[in-house]
Amino acid sequence: MRLGVLKGFLESLQPFNTVGKLKNFLHDSAAVLGQKAALDLCREVDGLSELLQQISPLTSYLGKAEALLGADHPWQEEVRSQRAELLSKIGSPKRRSEAEFKRLLANTLGDLKTKYQDAYLAAHERSRLGANDDRRKASLTKDPRLARLQKLAGVELMPTQQLRDFENRLFALKTCFSSAGPISRPIRCARTAASDRRRSRPAVPRRNAYWPISTRRSTR
Image (tube, rainbow, N blue to C red):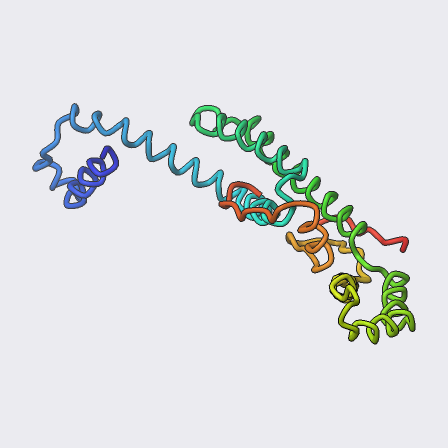
């Protein structure tokens, strides 16, 4: 409402573009001073917009990262806690304009990003099939004992469902020789995703609330 009134007032000033036209100026000093509150609000909006643009790369990254880690991961709880604290402070125009708060905001978001990367790499390292694991998987798929069990599966009284469950789990295992670093954006390979689904319910995609990494080599 205040900004709409200010817009109308500023539009009414457009015809007065020369000194001579000012003799027909219709507004008194009270009317001009009455726009101060709306102008202050414009400055607040501009300041908030500028701040959001500055942190947009981090908030976009973290928003995607939230949807990738399991909902019960400790990192998710830290994100919720930090978000609540930052939102309570960013709501104050005076507070969010302070250089100290801007540094705190950038450092907090940067720290959450680093912790996500560490959590992802740890999960990836636990879950992926490396070169040795891939050779073991290949050996199991060609194991003569498995071939004999597959032949026995044709016998009606045999517990074939147990064999099918084993085969499904075996063939679903994904190989990833990469150590996943460096990470320039939130990603999750198929093997890590499958492991996360086994450990927890799928994470619910979140709004863009806020939200790549030092190179690390696998020892596997």
